[in-house]
Length: 195
Image 1: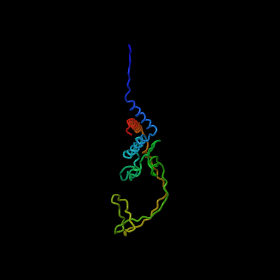
Image 2: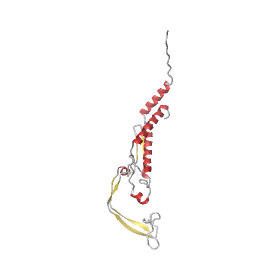
Image 3: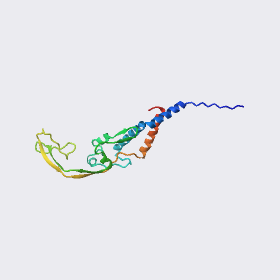
Image 4: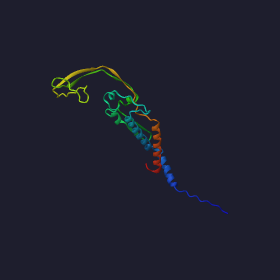
């Protein structure tokens, strides 16, 4: 009596292709770093919306927001708009290139020098200062062409501004979990030939 067995392997080419594509991703992992950088950028932008740091701590409300309303770190949105990422085959980074980004992230002291200047302020027909519509305690600046104006000289002494830390960059546990999920998604796309 003879017993025989025949085995047929199907899909080996597909498996080999998937392994080859996974190897190619390992050699040049830019798509992985790009996905992680985009996530880091998005996560950071969301922190500006929530006003919280990576650890979930709410930012200290700024004096401007206390007096006039609005959101901390979002007066001109310059810092928020500057958040970007850079990815290559060696890694990814995200952050801001504006000069004051570091002091908002870490906190610190800003040393201001003394200075003097002259302001031209608009007046009405009786010589009283005109006030801004939305901010009644502020005067209206006058151009050189305004005939009803008064010049006022002012001096501001040297002073230190103490800026509290308002961390917006960082990776917390939820971010790390999402980054692992994204990494798996990118590897899966590479295996399926979708990259």
